[in-house]
Image (cartoon, rainbow, N blue to C red; front, side):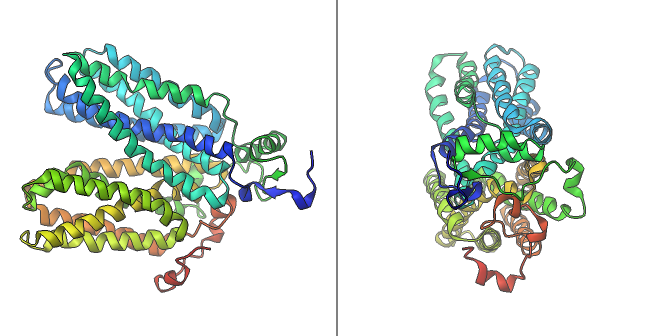
Length: 457
């Protein structure tokens, strides 16, 4: 094996190979399954309400059950993977998801279904924390943003797939909801089988002092002349509480608030889009809804390109600013100016979908290897609290104060995102992963200097 110095290259500078594409495809599992699980429960709830005699409270609990599990799984399994390794949790997540999804077929009461869906959420939450962490730790820096951001698009594919499957299964009779819910086990078990044999993260192994194992994995999967950065150090006894240490609290706070400010408007507005459009005076909701969904899809795809073109910091600040500028008119402009309002809403939708890609890229780059999965789990958990609160409050505010106040409130959330990003957003794009996660490299510029550094490379 030739490891001559002139022919060796750092793992972070490796060319993209088949293994990188494989680990990305395997990480797609959580995003597809999350979109599928959340989409299919909505369709099933319309059918199982009568046989289970569900109250409005149980409808709400079952609808949000996976979200509760996501919160638990992100924190617990993210922390655990920093202790025992990424690969074990990477497999265990889909054992939990697959078994709990299958058992839904035999439920006869809302309590059992609620518990099973919490377990599904725990597995999904763990995979959000561990999957993106494992992918980030294997990805070359040149392709890291694109590979992580592409996971966001797959969530939409899972959601659409659940609607198609639900549409056809609905015709199977009174127990069709059982088949709908259990169908989520199929992609889960496929992902589980394909993940068998996934190697451990070499960065995690080095953080545990297991350099020989790490070197073998790097040479086998990344390339025979690949070497891991000598700046990745052995275990430094970092733990969950180090997320709030003097050197890391700013990154933990930025990651959490950035994620929350991004997902509150996204989840709240698109969950209640038909109600919002009616409140704005649009009678023919279907065509407008379809138009906005097209912009949502196009924005997500365009965001993959934009992630590569612009710096993380510049892209974050300017997308928050554009979102605030385009949402604010929906709160103050008279509904008779419908063409102007739809243009604003379409631009908002496009940019929101593009910006959402950041939520799967930035968190993995903010934290050092020893606590990366804990950090990603932490900010994901906080984001799920934010999205749940926002989704709960929006219809209440709409009913009590109208669409104007609701849109202004969402605009203020986005303005907060601008302020937080200007103050604390680090630049992580062009750096090796261990450098990107080092707070000493933050050097956040004032807003006036962001324009000159919008292009990262």
